[in-house]
Amino acid sequence: MHIVNARLRQRSELFELKIDNGVFTAIETQTGPIEASADQLDAGGKLACAPFIEPHIHLDAALTAGEPAWNESGTLFEGIERWGERKPMLSEADIRQRVIKTLNLLIGNGVQFVRTHADTSDPSLVGLKTLCALRDEFKDKIDIQVVAFPQDGLLSYPGGDRLMEEALEIGADAVGGIPHFEYTRELGVASMKRVIELAMKYDRLVDVHCDEIDDPNSRFLEVLACEALFNDLGARVTASHTVAMHSYDNAYCSKLFRLLKQSNINFIACPTESIHLQGRFDTYPKRRGVTRVKELDAAGINVCFAEDSIFDPWYSLGNGKLLRTLDFGLHICQMMGYKDFSKALSLVTDNSARTLNIEDRYGIEVGKPASFNLLEGEDDYSVLRNQGDVLLSVRHGETIMQREPAKIVTPPWIG
Ligand code: FE2
Image (cartoon, rainbow, N blue to C red):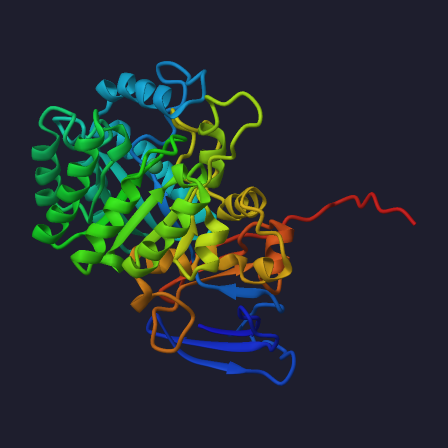
């Protein structure tokens, strides 16, 4: 494959991209636009960007909203309750068909890497087993990491610790946790220490649903970051949500940030999900309930955006379009300056790659797998503004998705 007239992020020139055996073999600047030959692909000045990454989603629950009942209150806790009613209906066939549908939605929107959580508060572990099987089955089409996620508590759910070990023995890629949902603060702290212990025992990544509550006293993030620091695991550890940080007082946050920086852990914010689920116990003013993305980013701490849900008991919208999540996230986090827009795509690409520990095989660089999207725009800013669909998605040098750009047939133009 040979692409001409492509733009790259943070560069103003046009580029030629040469691909052989699924790998970028040359990336060369052009002096101006080139007439593409029959065997070349003309990018037309559009942005070639590393694939989108969905770093936090619950594929086992996707497409189950309203089954058997809707989450009417819109709270996280009613979501857990509704999911608890859906869980007994889970089967391998049910999960497979919903996950495949959702993966196709993601692939159609330029996503080539996914980190999914799999609920392990289930003695059958059917969700985790099915997701691990699908991960292996579709590895040529999409990269999937499976997090063993103890939805009802690692230590509070009967047998939760044993189920977590079983999940890791089956092959989960990461250990999860939910300290704010454990029965007591003490159990929450103990669960964080246990998560790190298990990650070291099985040599796995860590991704914790951490402090997903508007309670300013929910402070398990400091425990997780401290354990990561003391065990030198930082880059392999992720704190998802951390929405309580929105409600921490600034003096505590100032102290906390010192630890967060030293620990080198990653953060995932889910702006659409969190602004929907959080602030539900407030009257007015209502908190936005999203972690301090702008401040984390400014402090040099790695943070990325995720959708979290697609039509499930916690969030009954969602469509696999990370540009939508990015648009919402920048608004909600008040990251609306020119500099923010100019590097916005990092929040759904490069930063997410760092979180997933896949930087060695991600990005448009000679020697790396030739995987990229062609986007509607010439730079981060215009792609964000256009909110266009992904035009082309190439994986390891093979086209896996291509679409015609939408166009108005009868122009309503005036003047
Ligand atoms: Fe989640």
